[in-house]
Image (cartoon, rainbow, N blue to C red; front, side, top):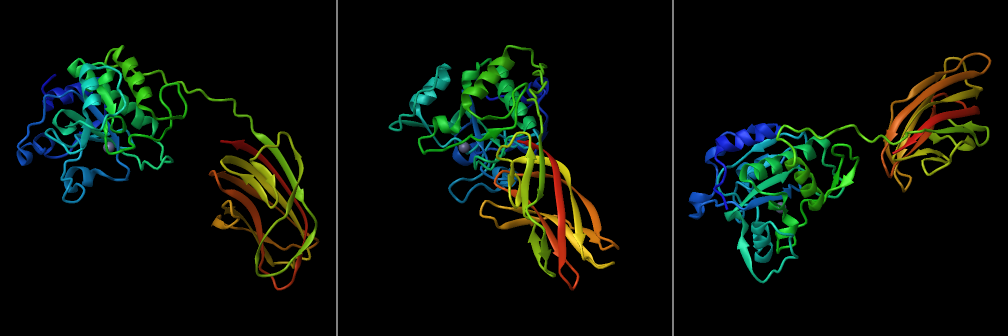
Length: 365
Ligand SMILES: [Zn+2]
């Protein structure tokens, strides 16, 4: 049991813990104590949330959600760049109904039981609320800077109040209304690469931080897995006539690949995401009149084969005695997307695509 941190103590604690923060104008007097007639505090813990949105500061600080949920909706907002915005010092509308059995465990700093929905308390009385910016769709990734600040923020409050990491809870652990937050993928933390957010992991990271001085920095040498690229060499399935006026996929066929996996080789697709690649395609045209143009571009397709995006074209201009050209190919392909090479004959007559050799280094992600 403790009184809420004064603005001065909170600033000092965040600063000591290395949290980058900014102060929203009026935060030291913002809160719903007067509106509700209920004073914020004593405090017993920190409730962690994700915003399930983007650019949520306006909603959290000023707008709220409809008539039922007036602002402020948190004490602080943690942006994707790792900067914490201090929003409110008083009572904030973030916790909703907290299962009483879970609340008692937070107060006692014991492992949290599953919610018993039959008895609840108002979590807004006594829990700090941190909203962490994330769409909450399971795809949006908490950045390294954001997660590092998250650990620091919760630790700063625990250190200030002499709490253990067990005073940090997640909305999904306390809510009797089925709230799912916080959740989602994290880009990494310390030496850890990408991982899935869990409150257990956050508490473990807070515990580790609490065991150090406030100015501690987690070692950040990233585990870089050996990134050996796949070498891919594709050739033209067959020579063919390219009619004028239509973008057309080049049909490629595998000539050689040192380690086939699911990132390459599925004509006309030459790379499937998620992957990064660099290389080139060498082309030879017959019958391209001098000065006539064939354009070459990469196009990005979804799983259904639909074009999602095309990249800027290169121009191959007809020269006497056959036309040769090499076009660079470097891109990152997200998951669920694949790349093709396409040609557009801008002349009036068909042109023979006599040869195409595509060589790439492909790094799967
Ligand atoms: Zn929440």
